[in-house]
Length: 180
Image 1 (cartoon, rainbow, N blue to C red):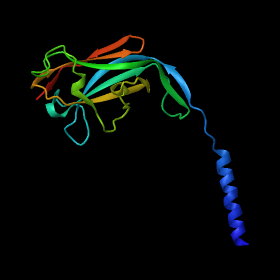
Image 2 (cartoon, helix red, strand yellow):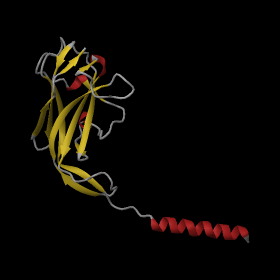
Image 3 (cartoon, rainbow, N blue to C red):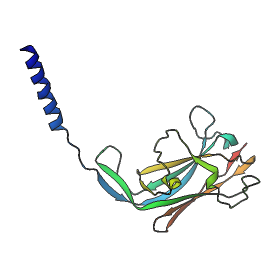
Image 4 (spheres, rainbow, N blue to C red):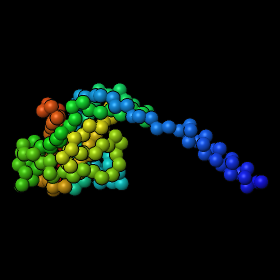
């Protein structure tokens, strides 16, 4: 008899649990990319940090491409999803001065950067590397890129151009940074 009561209670609790949980549809929230900026990170320690005294070891340079949107989504709701109406089709990076012997000033150097694999706050994946578009966003989201080409010692500055599906572009230039 005890066995039957236990089984009946288990079935009852299972039915209650499954009846009260239902999957809700995710509601897309249309938004637009409104701006872009570039920040420098020093990746020499255990975790990336802002550069001290405007200098970074050239082997430890990390670039952040911060994208802002007009989305009012704050990340607390699992039922809403900001979607770019005009997705980002291409992310291009340029050097404003000579990177090294192979890459003179004003040249596109997107291939010199790789997507940073570790977790960073507000990080999104760069789907343009796989010939897809970036359409899933947050109000503040960023792409993190690690520099794999060894730059010359000296002051460097970069420019990013985000090309949207419509052909419109968003551009930004970084502050100068000393790589040693």
